[in-house]
Length: 169
Image (cartoon, rainbow, N blue to C red; front, side):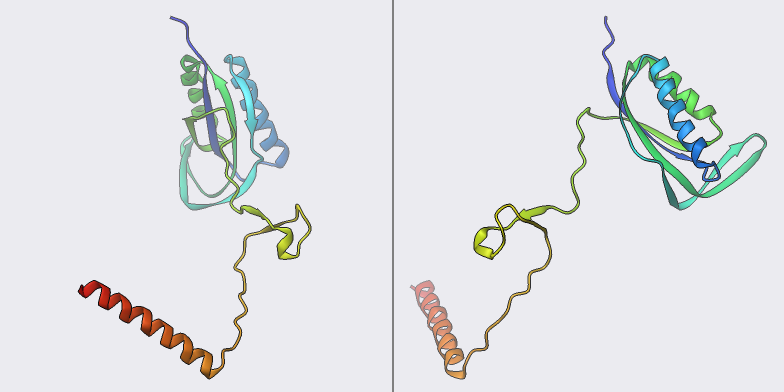
């Protein structure tokens, strides 16, 4: 039976007191560990300082350290499922990684833009191909005269009374 590679993504929180150079070094070390275990790098995020929703406690040596901030990053890779256990053990042993999560995923980028763009037609007074972000559109209302309002009210009443007569039959 031949093992097939599976696509994984690991998201991880690192110690926020690490200097920027060491943060990038940790990410490089992780990519190297993936490669050493027969994995293939697909994509990665950018390390971002992150305010945690709750305090994470991690035992480092004989001491419990509390973290309310971290540096978050992620790496997507392809690896033989038999090798993922070894990678997990390596991540668990790294004292600078506060918490991590390894998930199975797909190779394709599945991120959806949070703000869709809409093309405006030439009829709306824009150049062809111009785009804008969606936003509430202000609709200008024209003022109606008293006679126009009465006419509209009468038409609505007629429509309602026609419906009532039809439903009685």
